[in-house]
Length: 250
Image (cartoon, rainbow, N blue to C red; front, side, top):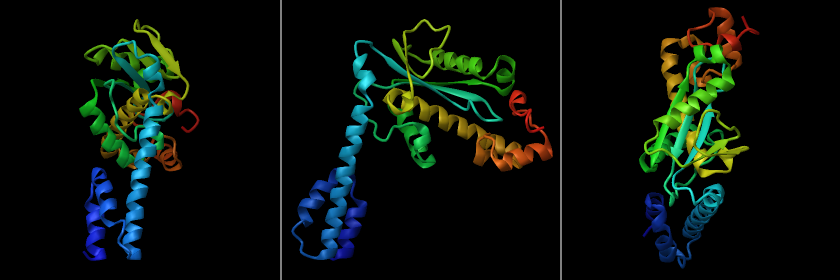
């Protein structure tokens, strides 16, 4: 085979085919082929590191393994000037091995979108809850966040036996809870909930951008970027702006 053909074979290979690729070409003395073999080895090594990282993310799930169904809870959108706060609730199977789950803020938009579909397909149950800008103004962002979390939990079928929460204890919930500081980076369940909520909210803000194109919601997702604040001062607030958040600007 030519080096170009070998390169094409590597590019087309799925991860499970890499050991065979390495075994086939590792004795080829051509320098270009050896670089391709080394590239394949690095891909395998990266995969093993990722598997180890994901296994470490299961520490709380293992600690509370006596509970039947464990649900991760997280929210996105507490800080923006516009749009809802969204809570995600995800119950992963006990043998879950979805790779690349992490705090949603640490992932690219493309990777979040990919993982959203995988989580939706493989989870035992997943749901989202919302609190509107009006509700945030009415009862404050913390209470609205709790409300969104309770809504997400209530939508789950089956209901979980334990909640792993990112940082907070949710009032008005009878299910046992474990608050974990920075839980979206420490628990695979909370990380999955973070991704599920983030993608849901981002998609909502992209739809709002079509209705209110002046504010750049597709890019800033309602957060207070300079362009967003300038548009707010120029055009005034939209129905999805949080009145209690924008007093410093208008």
